Length: 215
Image (cartoon, rainbow, N blue to C red; front, side):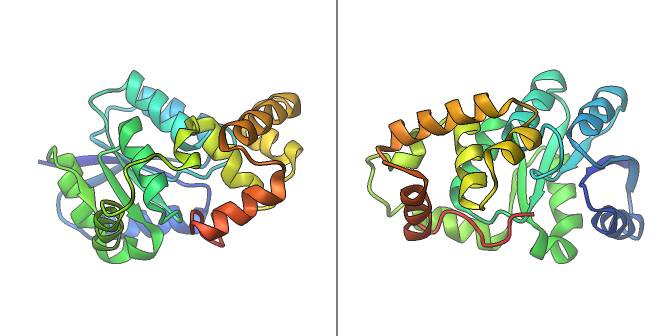
């Protein structure tokens, strides 16, 4: 039986590489590709596929919100997140939103086929490196850290602020107004009890929340 796969990533080289890997593996068919959030949503709605390989950082609506909307509209579609974000906190949010697997791009060439097959069969896939991060997190204090109180959208704004993106750039990426982003920023500062953006950055570095290069 052939597993139909959709690929969503904003980098053409990545899409071509993923397609190439699956084309040379037995039992897979790439049924469509998308390069941004809106294209991905349209593709998922229009295509009868088994697995969506989804990048969380694409132009337009993307991230955890996009994942959740696709899962709400197409509950039978299994979603394998493929991302540069290797943080345990980001992976946990992806699984809560409906992902069935989480694979970092650095592991994709070696693990993609096994990950897609596992997810397509109804299982859950986590790379070895990510599994180790989850295991280590079990030793953390039970009390929630400040960033764990944030909503998915607030957490996304937090990540982008720490990456040095401006309010305008964040609004464009998330398809919301700059005023809305400022509201999210004020809300997350309040929830985390931080006085300003620089304190957010120091907090993220101290807790090793985000990669240096989030693509």
